[in-house]
Length: 387
Ligand SMILES: Cc1cc2nc3c(=O)[nH]c(=O)nc-3n(C[C@H](O)[C@H](O)[C@H](O)COP(=O)(O)O)c2cc1C
Image (cartoon, rainbow, N blue to C red; front, side, top):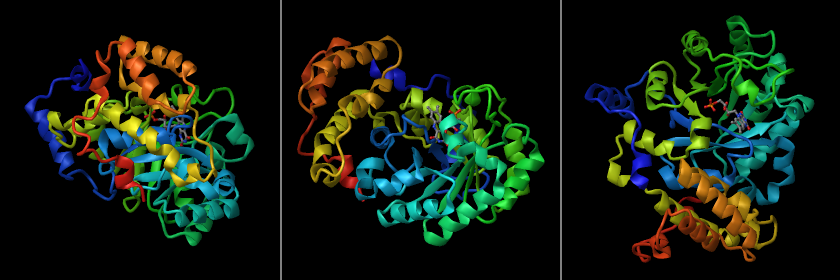
């Protein structure tokens, strides 16, 4: 039952497979990014627990995982327990920051570097009212000199890469020339991610701003041609492996948001079709849940939690990423059953409500199916990879 949802939805013709395999071998246009494919920053989605799930699904070698946007000031406030607040630093995790004060952004960058984080991205694309109120996010596209100053302040404070994620434009500033000049003003930096649609600061909600302004990939490709020294990642509307391959022939990277939000197992489709992972090496949803439960079990032992510097996440927040592992009716049943079970739970224990919900949704027939095949062989991904 689980295997079916792991299989690619479209046929793999030989020629098609060959194109994808070429990308896996690195014969695409530029080869300048360690992780050409990335999972986008998404507020309330890209939590430490979601990133943990992605690591369990596909490890840390293939994709960069961006955290949700964090206010620079919040990084300073939470500096004593950043590993719990953001998740552990890993080479493929990029922390996204929002802010407009170069000094605060630079101090936040320093904190992140000191705590072992490997890369920082500046949000210059979020159109939400709260973010506009703070004069950062997409509104910053109207002040390229300020973005340049923020970048410079951060770059002179840290040696880890500081990158930028922006839109094609904002409001009436939406021509190719505007985009080119915006990027030009920023000076040298190592990586630009472009959400390939403009945004409107008034009249559209953030959700509408991710759907209504039309995508324009050609403009991003034109920018990449005009700025051959700047690694560029295309973002927006990418939902199939062919789109990934296509983009990687024209730009350095491809960032995927909602497709992974709605179905984290999309990474397994990419694993198989782009990285040629054999089907029997792909984990089942139940095996993934097993590993996630192990992670949840040792979470209270992490220093930031057990020294009381930061509270454990509510079980509803911790378990939220799991419900997207099943699509269709089983997924709905699992989500509903899990909510019911979590309401009854008195202890900080995810295993029992998840097991009951899987049983009630007929996703397992016996609790023993959630046990390790060989407990002695088991090693927890957190212990293996946490820096
Ligand atoms: C729920 C949600 C939250 C988002 N939060 C952020 C954010 O914190 N920072 C950011 O740069 N973009 C954010 N985005 C935008 C995504 O990073 C991405 O640019 C956008 O969804 C387009 O990519 P997609 O079509 O692959 O989803 C968010 C998107 C979603 C769906």
